[in-house]
Image 1 (cartoon, rainbow, N blue to C red):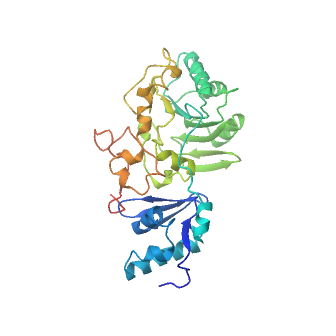
Image 2: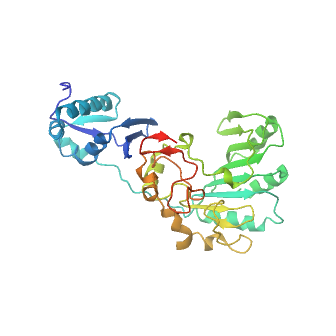
Image 3: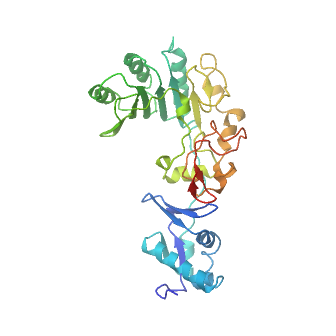
Amino acid sequence: MNMQIDLTKHILLFENCQLVKGMAQTLLVDFQRRNLEFLENTIFDIFISKNRDKNIGEILNDFDFETQRNILEYFDFLLENEYAFLCDKSEVEFFPKINSEWNNPADITNCIIDFKEKPNSLQAYKNLIFDLDSLGCENIQIRVFNDISIEFVEEFLSLFENTIIFRIDLLLKCSQNVTFYKKFIDKFPRIKELIVHSARINKFYNIQHQRMIFLEKEIKDESCCGIISPNHFNLRLEHFLESQQYNTCLNRKVCIDVKGNIKNCSALKNSFGNISVVRIVEVVNTEEFQKIWQISKNKIKTCQDCEFRHICTDCRAFLHSDYSLDKPQKCNYFPYENELL
């Protein structure tokens, strides 16, 4: 037994460190340092149910000698790496649990607008952007799958002037050289990320507060979505808290597909009308539109047993089966044995 730890002390996790229990192991997420660690599920059970009202000695009394040694090794690791700290019983109340509630004042936080060709008129899109502004939306992704003139793209981007929308991610099909695109995004500081697909090379550029990504892959349509990968893990506390109650891909989102149809996701079949005849303010606050927002990872088959579920993205468009709460089709992780299939 490790005698360096005072068994009369209580051990608490720093609140920027959160635990997620999976079927085979527990994930510790350090949101401040963006670190991930893997622990045994016994450690999760200790911190969730026992550590606040029991000191270390009292915790250990519930286990056999071998398990005690294992627990103390984990405690050493957590303390040494500053994931946890020791305190007296009288001090526990000074370290309350983090408020797990999530809310956002915006009715819509993000929107995807897809194009395959130049629309005949921009009036419906002018109404759309006006409504997005009134709904509090601050983040837009514009995806252009086919060749569309850069003049049209510039005209469309100009519609966002005098709105609260401050972040635009833009996907374009390659038709110009790198120098051109550098000058292009310099004219539009709201563009935070420009992805140029169908390029000759894969290359990444950081340009002050903006970045450009060139991809050899051709992105033809919305089927590019739904990829579940560690590269897409979101280690922001806001995302973690949102995921406890909501679907982190679709919550507070609206999508406009290439035909102008209003959807939760461009890849989903269900449409709520076309922007040429329906204003999104008439749609997004309806119960039917918001229903899918409530599908958190805790409700999804397999995902509910995964230790990565609260830092992961989700997809309700491409599933393993027709069952609406099935796991995403493009996820290859099997949490019951913590391995990739």
